[in-house]
Length: 261
Ligand SMILES: C[S@@+](CC[C@H](N)C(=O)[O-])C[C@H]1O[C@@H](n2cnc3c(N)ncnc32)[C@H](O)[C@@H]1O
Image (cartoon, rainbow, N blue to C red; front, side):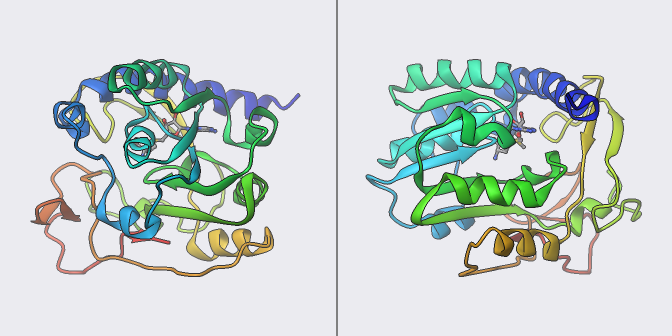
């Protein structure tokens, strides 16, 4: 028994259940285009993935499955896992509607080795994932366990510097390095910034060296690392869109780093 773990999983699952329903209908996720066949994957991860046809992919923290289904449409054999039971319900509905055969599983990332017996060519996880996990070493070991010998982790994430800022992108209020759990009462979320959806979330910041060291200590080999001066998602309200689909902090002369790995 671990009451602190049970508590953060229950609170985050509850918030993600609410957000899953709302996100599914939001403009942010562009469901109409997705239903017509558009891929939800961004250029950054598509370039990292390369050819996926015939490859087995484990998608960790898949939300309601847009990226998982996009990968399946590209010919990959996809298994996908998420904590939110509501997100997994929606993912299964979408899977059926799109005629794809992704295997969706509800569960905690740390339980993946018990929930999923296979090993994969690629473990894929992107954009807003590790901040929900307290122990990055444990995450890296899960990733390593789920890979076949010679398999690859494809990981794209918001740069940890971004998570130091408040929602107004004006002040630095959070630690860069992982200190303690960040517990917050929230109303809207990144996809519906003005909608009132009250909830409590618990998250963690992880610095770049923490993540890289964790992956190295799990015996993975780092083959590439990139940083970008834009975010492919408008994660804060009123960011500057410098080119279509490329966002920076509002009024920002400084070209803060955004996405990595
Ligand atoms: C920002 S979303 C994933 C990003 C994805 N690219 C997307 O936007 O569709 C984060 C997901 O992590 C899931 N999640 C949070 N904590 C988790 C945990 N401990 N284990 C598995 N999934 C978790 C949430 O339910 C949510 O669906």
